Image 1 (cartoon, rainbow, N blue to C red):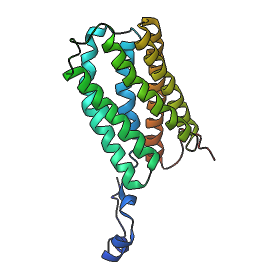
Image 2: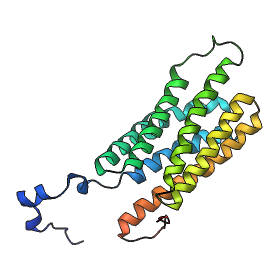
Image 3: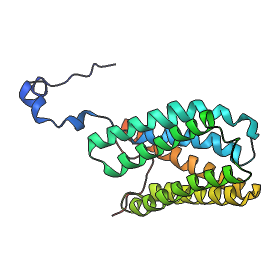
Image 4: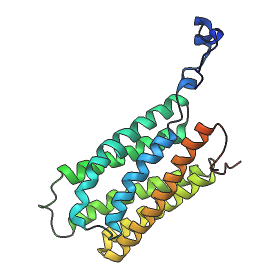
Length: 210
């Protein structure tokens, strides 16, 4: 394999100073989408009834390290690259997974009155439904894939919120199915970002919007 060399003209102090710092940072989008997809996939398997509720704790490691920390880092790198949409999205949903980890691992709701715990979690999910709704509006200016991701994610949160307030398991399961679709779309976006960057041309399209 031939060695990859950098022209000497590009390593001079003058050239290094003139090159924007963000230009040397790889696209953090595939990392953010991949982290979101994997964590969403596992929890949605529980919500859809494919896995018992008793194993929900298995997602906590993913929620803390991959969906949480890794996604927040992706958001920070998006800030450096000047991508406001990606920065807000990845940092916010990374914080969502961190807060989910804290809620499940450290918050004791056993003292709450009957039904109050469900109401509290329902409002938590409702707030994320609202946030996802306005991010969906903003996604219209990006590409069709992200519109699809945020559109299905909005429905996911909406059904999970409805299911929490109503206590109807079937509604929560619909939210779980929608979450699985969201995960698949996000994984596609992550793979497209990695594959297209590696191949240096579009292999998997994301359908940019004008």
